[in-house]
Picture 1: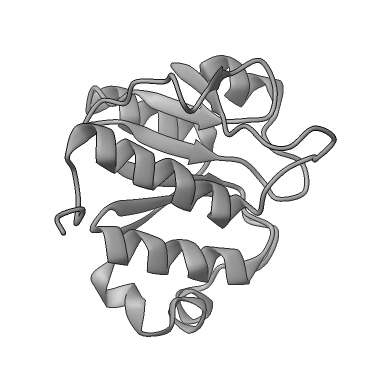
Picture 2 (picture 1 turned 60 degrees about the vertical axis):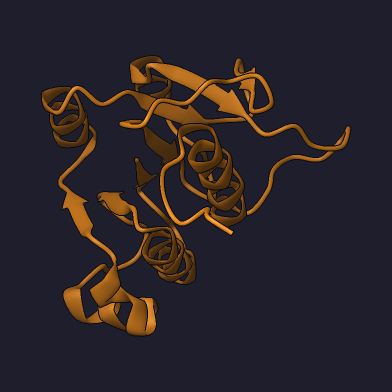
Length: 154
């Protein structure tokens, strides 16, 4: 199980994603370019003391990310607000990569079309979207619950 963030815009969200990945024992992939300078120093600063506990991989772009996922026979599961199966009925597999889009714009059509599955987290009528790391937390919890992956033991 892995988390991936497509061209994130907000450094604090990357820091929260690093913390989430570390606490759940999953790897994190960041698909560049980011909407801010993602230097090693900035990454250490945003990750606080969780950076050493999370496996973080920076991808040079969408094609680099897809090539890696396909090479490892991993399914790309995109979380989106359009044309997607509700989280409550989607079935995860242990090798899935849970992909989340930019905070400001989601993902382009190319990324949407390149996903193996699309999932949405149901929300109250009239609401646009959740914070990207909040969405990742909900999704990762459910994926781990279904597959038995991660620290879900009582």
